Length: 101
Image (cartoon, rainbow, N blue to C red; front, side, top):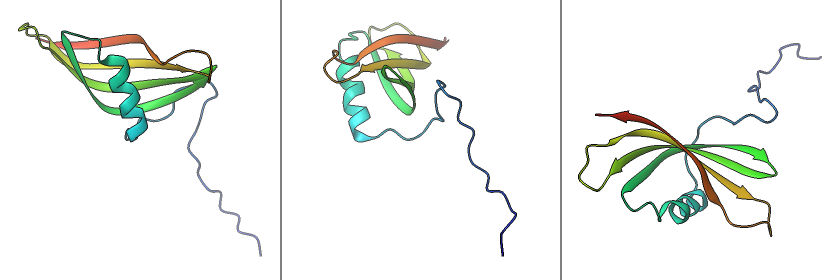
């Protein structure tokens, strides 16, 4: 006897970012490596989503705080591009801030 109930599967759009999820240790290490040169801003990643392109885009939802005494803090998206093997190192490609003052 066949079960006629359809199973619901999450909708995934080709080329779109997936759902936000917990950050793996490897992703955290990569994030720390690419953001360590940000002298006056500390980013604390809270979650991540990925997008497959010619490599992988990682979109981290972060808290940020300026460490130079300015009252500049809030949440932001930090996008990191990790190219295919042999094509270079991961790098920050975009930071979109939602500043609170």
